[in-house]
Length: 264
Image (cartoon, rainbow, N blue to C red; front, side, top):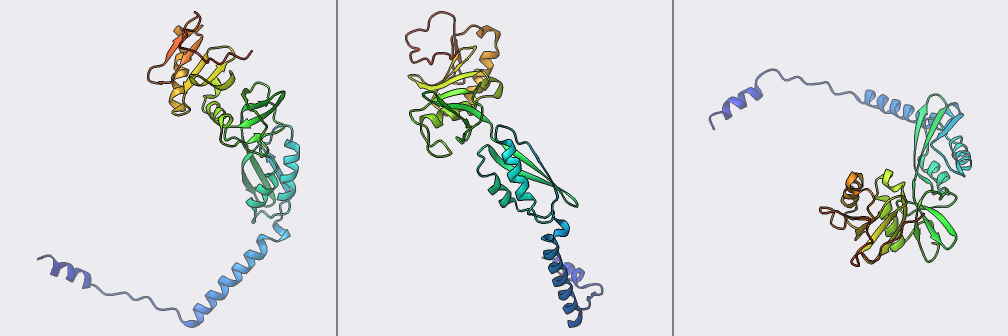
């Protein structure tokens, strides 16, 4: 309590500096200047003076890459370097499910680089002899090559552009969670009696059980497969990732039913 008078004296001591208030004329001129500059910018940003003339599209690959580049280029040339409409660019890319996102890089005065971020295919959805590539989020990628992709069986081809919830969608999620080097060697993912399993083309069948804790299960599977002691194993069981096991060259015991056979 004894400090309060001292603080009060410190606050009130010294000359007070008062800034002059701008007069109505200055305020009015400032408002006019702001309005003029704002109007000038709005006119300039959509003016042909800063129209985009040079468009480069990077990151687009696949069988329909040329069509995508043309669509994005035509959309961009209807814009200016000061007013790039991302919604219009995404609308132009919308017929191409391979496109996950777009980013742009302006280069004054009239050049624009559009970078395409593509969805990666993680599986081939198969119905009879038909196959269509699928991204990790369940988006179907018609026209994308399916060679070398792990297969996921389904009773019917989806009618939309994305897999709905169900066994096929879960199988794709199981594959999407795999480390890329391991997924490149995956042959087939399916649900067996012991739960979800993935058959490796040149390796064992990996049993995961339920489709939860996938990151931990695949980390455990990778560690087992990297161990020279597991070479030649018929199966790897990571249903309990804290206690992974590997089956040897002998025939599987009767308790290991429902194995998904490797795909040649």
